[in-house]
Length: 516
Image 1: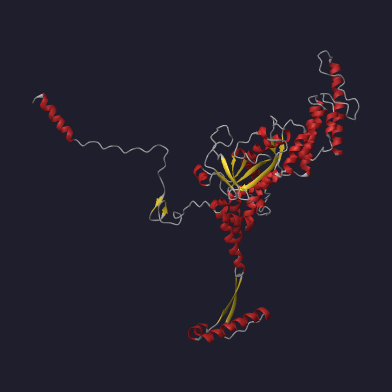
Image 2: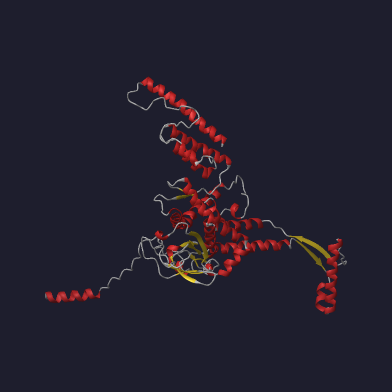
């Protein structure tokens, strides 16, 4: 057989061999495709059981203005959910940290009060939590005809800041579809203009630099677009839990009327209802009504020899546990402890509620940084331009502690801070003037040292040696300046003299502290 024939036969034989099957495509690593399922027991994914019938439809309750308004006006729990956190966010307000003189800081604090900025800010935070969004129109005198132009700080005249006007998202403010495209702008990606409608029906196009935004709960991108660049109402999160609590409460109240059931057994009741005419049935009804009146007024009940009377009492055991569970669900949904939301004392062994309140304070602090800080960042420079004609480079602020300390806590805090100032003064790091400024600044948060006047600070010695204004006489350090030429005995003598006279300084500070 030729080589060509053998090759041809080999090709034919190879063609008869079964071809290998193509391998199945491999799923990417990390993709979970397993799920539990027991069809016979109706358990797991896709089986006909009650759990698999659960769905979570997209409701968007925030867009139901009538529902939000009705709940806020009539439901005390909703009102506390909406009002409590904003009130705690703004209650102790802020402390301005800057190198400005104390009288200038007091002028800024006066603007907060006179222009009711704090009150309007609280209102904006409330409406944002209720409706999902609100806006504050910055009112500057003389800018009525240029609201559609960007706010230029150079054109803010002295005393022209008149406060802010709050409008919720349903009451006269509507964002435009045009967005801020300047990446350096803090409002980048947000609406560039807002259509504002006043009470007299006049509609104005306002630039975003003249608007402070108050937003509810943050939403994903597409949902934020559905809410026209606003957030979600707090009611959306707690609405289902609120319905469970309300229905449970009403059912418990209804059961009170059934707590003591009275049952009258009549031997011929079935025959009377079956064969009796309407007149006989009416007589039966009148007899039972008369018996009920006798039972109520005289404690007497007349029965036939074949009749029987019995009472059945309903047991309320376990209802309180169910009711409290729903209360806990509401408190968890709105991120508030039960002690704060419902005004109830902590229950259980060794329960103090301290950990719950600490978590709540952290929630409020986070809200301050997330929702309140952007508003203050926009208002403070405008207020400075209106009051001083310029914005200090170091203008900044801190939120004051949310919790109001007790008198004991304040006394301990003042003592620690005062000792720190005394130690710095006695070490020659700061002078009298700086020490008095620090003590004066403490008065805002502690209420102590309020009698230190600006004249006292100006007349104080600003050198880093103990001054002559202290009533203990000459408090020089004994000539010890740390010179290398001073011998060891002289250094020890100077240190002892310095320590003795430093004790006099401390005694004077503490005596002044106790007098105040």
